[in-house]
Structures are given as structure tokens and as C-alpha cells.
Length: 479
Image (cartoon, rainbow, N blue to C red):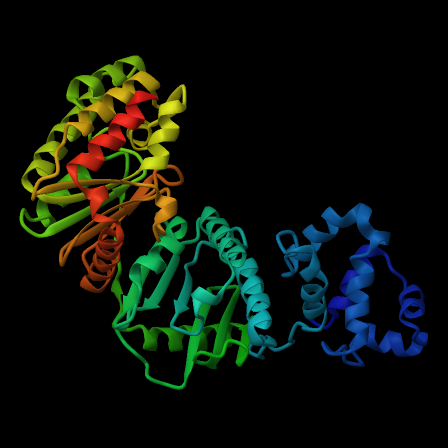
């Protein structure tokens, strides 16, 4: 693309649109339109012309060549393929009105984007830019308090989760830095973003600072593509402004600003593979002490909580032998020793247990991650596992509760959590990821422990004694 050619001219050439055709559509005289096409007259973002051109290009007349059009635009920095259809015209309009500068040091800025909806549009634009294939340089996300994520709709969080996943699949690492203040709800943040945090190409860091200003800033940098700054007043999401810098100097400025704000950051947690169960057990042996209380929450019991002979039978039935079988059996032995010497409160999902007992078989996801393929437990084998767990009696060192997770304020549905006060927290979801994470940062550990302690306290006492537990197991095993 010649530096002096406008993007409008480039697009018209690709689609073979004549100046006369577009001038008639816009109800302009051909002379005035020719000036727009050649850049002698500026095509403004706020003018009706830029919006109508975008609507025309994305209309039914060119529907047959949409895939070719999207590929062409992506090559020239306007990626529409993953953009919701209702937002495509706006993004194309912004691209059309951002003329490529002749001076490589000149600023190329998209925006400003105002308010909450503007911030969402800017975020979509930024993460689309970050998906560029062939660029393996890191993407930095400085989540420094500019957004109250509790007020962001779940659908948009899922959209961002998919976008970040797409970036990492293109071999780009993502480094996220967040602020851990005194009121930081670590358990909420971790569970909200768990699919991202479990991604082995994502590193999460934190700064224990309160910038103590009336405004807050978020900074995002995709090296070689774009940088974004969102600034707004705290607690007023409609009072915000986002800018996207596409030029190298703007990106360098944002990078320097983020480095300064996060220079004291520390790694928030570490990853380990679920296929290596001894790695987690060794970490537990190192960090979990006998006396302090430890909470364990699982939807279903795993292969680490069953008799050795039953685990050996399940492994045989699934054609697992040799080193893999020995690894699983060893992990089971060591986990039981650790469980017997520590002070545990365990919570299982009674609804999930009942559902599994009605199923012909259950896929043991933790065990499947170790073996590297699906491992099934028959209904009869799962029943025997529950009979084994039912023999456990509530004592001062081990207490068990069966609770329908739908009845309590549990944000960890589908995930497993182990946390000991002032020590360590582990979290994983073997259904969606091969990774687990663990953290020893006391702000995070304390947040998780207080949250689960509150959950435990809200479970009625009757549901935490032997008589109730026996009654529930009897009801489940009678089916």
C-alpha cells in the first residue's frame, strides 16, 4: 500500500467500486468525492459519509465476497472476522478514517472512545490487533483498577476470555498485572478468570499498591500492533476515555508508563501440570502444616480419595499399566498419608454425587489428565468409592459436608480448591485445562481462606455431623 494512498482508495480498488458509483450512493458530486478518495479532503470519523461508506461495503452487494474482503482488510490492519456483526461497520469506519502517516514517527491514534460502551469497543479493537499471527512478542495487560469487573456482564467477560485464548494460541505470551489492595477479593478474581489463569502462556503478576487518586488507568500493549490506555473516574464507569495507539512511539510511551506503574510487581502464582500429581503432593508436603485448618472443595471425589485396590482395578479396566499405573498408585498413597496427618474440612457437591450415581459411568477428569486420555469409572466402582468415603467419621481433624453447590454462594462450581490459612492455595479445573495453579501470596491465600471459612460457617451445623452425613450417604447409596 503506497503511503500516500488513502484507505478508501485502497478499498475501492479491491472491490472494483467506481468513484461515480459511490458518489451517487453518498449523494455527492463526483468532484467532491474525488477529493475524499485522494485525501485532498479529510474523511472524518464523525461525518455521515464514513459511516455510510462502511455500511455500503458491508452490505448485501458484497456479501458474496465477504470472506475475501475480510482477508484483505485483515492484511491491512482491520480484522472483522471475530467482531460481532453489529460492531463491524463502526470498526471499518474507524479504519477508513485513520490515514496511514507518511512520517513513521507520526501518531496514529484511534479514538477517543467514551464511556462504558466505548471502553468495550476499544477492548475489542485492541485484542483483535493482538491476534495478528506471526508476532510472538508479549502482550501486556495492566488491569490497574480502571474497571469494576463486578459490573461487567458475563457475556463480555467470556468474549475477552476467548480473545485472550486466541492470542496465546498464536504463540504470544500474555502478562497480566493487577492491583492487590486491602479489599482485593482474590477468590472472585481468580474464579472469574480461571480459564485464562490456567493457560500456561499467561503470567499473572500483582502490585500491592493503592495509587490513591481520583482517577484510575488501565494500560494494554501488544508489541508491534497497538497500545491502549483507558482512564476514568473511580466508581463512575460512564466517565472514562480510551485511546488506541497504532504507531511505535505511542506504543513505547504506553510501555514505559506501564513499566513505571508496575516496577514493584511480583508473580501472583505458578503453574504445574495435572499430569504430574506428585508435583502437587510435594508442594502440599512442603507447605501444608499439620495444625492449621485446610479447606478442600471438590464437586466429586478424585482418584486420590479411594482404596488402592479400587484404583488398581479402575486402571486395569481402562488398560493403564506400567509407569502410569505406578504413578497413580504412589500419588494415592502419599495423598492419604498427608490427609491423615492434617486438619481438613472437606466439601463435596451432593447434587453432583447423585447425578454420577445415576450415570452408567463417570469420567474421572483428574485421572484422565494423568493418563493422557479419558478414564471411566463404572457406576458400581463409583458406588464403592462413596462407600469408602462414607466410612470416614467427622473428628476434630477431619470433617466432611455434603452440600448442593446450588444452595450456597460457591463461585467455584466445576473447579477444585485446596487452601490452608496463611500458607498456600491450589486451584484447578481438570475439565477445561491441563494445568493447576498455586499461590503463597498471603493476600490471595487469606482471601480464599476467609471466603471458604464463611461458606463453611453458613452450612447448617446439622449438615456437618456424623448422623446427617450417614443419612445422606445412605440415601445416595440406596439408589
